[in-house]
Image 1 (tube, helix red, strand yellow):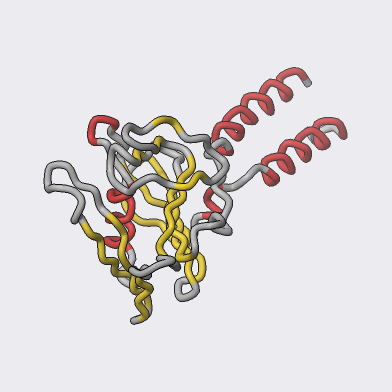
Image 2: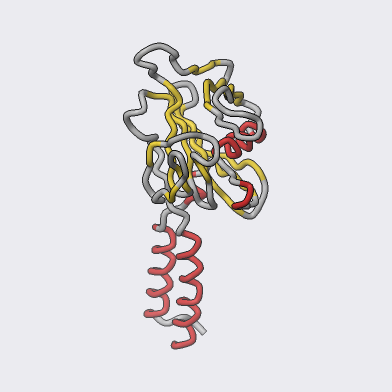
Length: 200
């Protein structure tokens, strides 16, 4: 039995709406790691351009997963990158890592160590938690200037975004941190379609 005109129109609207929803997967171009949960990591610089990583992992709040965890996953999954991370201000038990440099295609971008200390690898975060001395929730969907790479200064959560932008730190990365709501909305559309079909 052919669908009637109103059913075809409804399905077209649903499909169009789904296509217009923000797509996290389109923004994430390089997948690294394994696991049921996802966070995103953006690197932006003159040498790198913009590289967006979809980091897959298993979230565990008791492990206090942080940006150091994310960049470790990125470095393990992308052989074209190396980074120098400094733990001078922390200890093995209480790390406080700083990102000094990233090397890509044999070009190293190193933060300037003299005034005005720019450019440097400025930190931006969205979602999860951040802050000093203890982390508090960060709004998803927009960038907030970061307060540190290691827990408790930064705690990730599924759907959170972290970025490092080699710049003067005055503006956020060019990639928008898209809240991970698309899958939830798509999940809601399925029952709507079924309900509509049953009514017809």
